[in-house]
Length: 443
Ligand SMILES: [Zn+2]
Image (cartoon, rainbow, N blue to C red; front, side, top):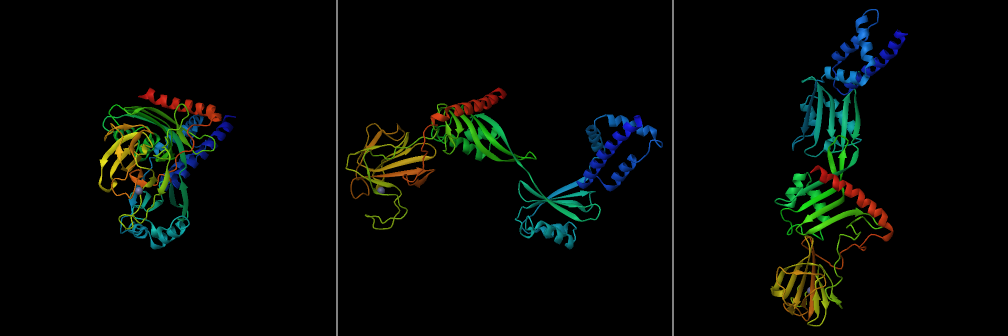
């Protein structure tokens, strides 16, 4: 009875050990000689060596995984691994040739790889890893690193020395990361310190682009937190960022919380706790009643200068003295007379958008450079100062410092989440808040 039981256990054990060893060999981790020695140890009978059998039986009663790990430890893999990067003058061919591979073998590798990559045309910086069992031995495995996610593995078959090729693609797993920081010197520094990179910081800044001027309003003590999707490869390596799920900014520019949500069939947006869109809106026009007399044109014949000059704004026809309103909240960055522009005002709305108002007859009382203005506030009056044929407002709109056609800018159509989405939105906020609170507990 006992013998029968042992047979079963032994059978299992032999199979597991054998598998481990074979696997080890395929991976280029166990040299043949060690393997034969070990397999030799396992091929005995009860009669010949009862002590070993008894010992094995004891081991077999333990978990096999424990045994395997013990064996792994005793078989410290003697694998020599080196990774090479192709420099300017190298080709895969010359690199492999210098490593002692025969032209025929290289030819075969290149041919086998051709299904996935043309090894004759890999870019500079292309990486390949060689694995050897024994420091000066021939490689048993060559890995071509196609990109962050994909590797091409060439493995030498121990029996017939043939090489097999397989492509290994790492799956991308989505994790949720929570990051937070308090500004000491700059937002960027606090974010880098917290483990974010430039791309993630830009996403965070974009969520609050309408509330916070990240270039001018950031002060020491400003606190921020972000829940962000993080793409990680199976091997644990960072792959990229997904979406910002929720973000908080509490500081000099105000306290803001934003949650990502898809309402109705709109594209995803960021909403505050009330369900209002974080992205603001500009007035459609700086004049209450207006008619466009000249649109935004990259090419246009200038009526006064009599040359082709782009018209990088929109002209509104109006009688002199018509009040001009700022299309959004902001801070006046320029107020004064500037050559052909005549009397002009330039307003910085946030780190992304600016507007300018030119040829004004005059400015609203009390305003100067540095004044804060509210959307719709009258800032000046239509005139014809500077290079102007008659009274009109020349209005300019800048996105990220570039002249932009204000009539071509696409702004969110919807201010708030749909009433029917309220319940779903509140649940999303609750989930995000749990993650945000989790961050607070750790700090
Ligand atoms: Zn104009």
